[in-house]
Image (cartoon, rainbow, N blue to C red; front, top):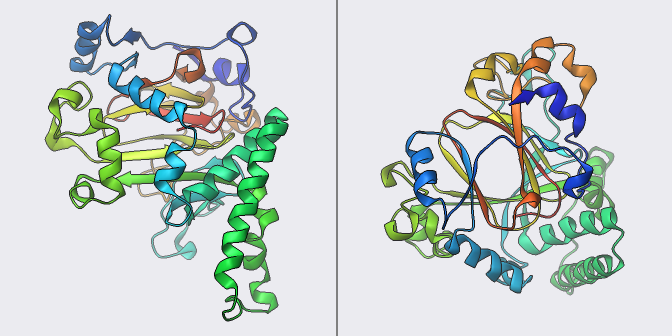
Length: 347
């Protein structure tokens, strides 16, 4: 592991310009195993509760190829009509929070993160995600695809309003800001973090949950032949949480109270990881805080680090997905800290 200051100054989390390996040092510290060549070693690591990276699992790679061969596959399945839970923000960093009793009960000096939640069809999210890539890469072809997607979306929206009542809305100054938030110009400037939380209970009823469990059988506790490596105890399974990132989206440093297996099926992501032993140096919010489990400082802003000098001495490492062929898994254990960035449209 390396000092936080060394890793983050080498590559600021807000920098999502991907580069070839010889242009940038990467502080990769986890062991990387090939599923077909090192299965027994990886299994030993898993049983010893050690984090690692696994690659080239034929079952995972089959999903990668399926989604890559038809770039519209997920779009066709998830569609342009049904809306799903989506986090949005005017800035690229997302931090979880829960305000019990409203803003009046916020701790002194606490600034509520600007991210909130909305609902959005997958097709619209994909349009916005590809738009971020098109602008960053200067891709004329991708920009043309985004333009066509937007025209189709607005055409569908216009058709819904034809011949009916005026669109709902309130023409007064008190609601102007809210209206502006939903303008097309405003949408283009925001970041969206699309998500599908699939549960086994829903999968039994044939909803989108069923599609997720059928597609990712290696995460289905009922299919032990496929999932025994990834799910140790089927009784402890807590669902499949799908996160679709757009370029620049950052999930601020936090830990989850469970064992995680993160699978990356396409696109590029960067994970900065820390051992639980480093928690005392991570400037964590205290128990009971609205942003419990998160760091109180911005990892991408070195000027804030001086507020907690110990943060610069914390030991971390990183995993960057574009250094591997697609379909990697990252095994993270109980309360291991992680901070992840989407370096492109990713899934």
